[in-house]
Length: 262
Image (cartoon, rainbow, N blue to C red):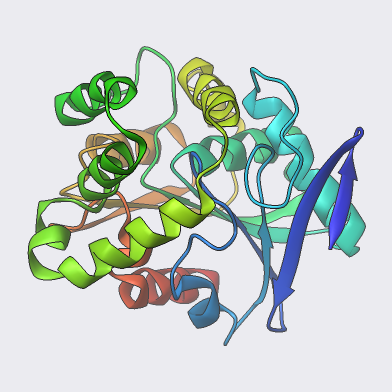
């Protein structure tokens, strides 16, 4: 299905039935980039999956993008689907979008789940050095080698070591679904310039913050920071899991989400 967000086409689909739960993905991942996670959640909820602007079947307008724009895209999808209120799950950049959406449309959010993300801005814990190095190397590498580097860094040491077949699966997905470089840069700009640190105390919705202790993309200390800043939040840190927890341990993350939302 296609929603219109101020002239930008945003693709989405819906799985399952029950109370609505909207999933918002991170940098350069489209709605096919969740692994088994949506199917597990669709056993309990009406799951809304969307392609952020710049990826998948959504339009990729000229950038740079802003998180506030991307939050409006989520609103457009919900309007098109006839959903007034939803629980919201945002991972990484999608966590920024989920925070901004909740600030803008507090009446439309039931509960909030933030995974592998941060409050943004200079007061948050910065990106770990491992990922700083990856971002610096990527422009100098051939496309396939660069995507492989991103996958292995995001999956994390444990994931690559114990589940090499999963690294191969995610790499194959990234090869098939990688957005144009300009769209990647436009999304990356939105994440790099987002700062909700001094505003998110206004979010009083019940919130679960999830992080993997082995995350080398978003410092996992940001989970506790979010739980401190948000007045009605708690943090759950999953040992040894990396940034791509929704792939690496989809059953555990789905269980945490289902218990919290139920």
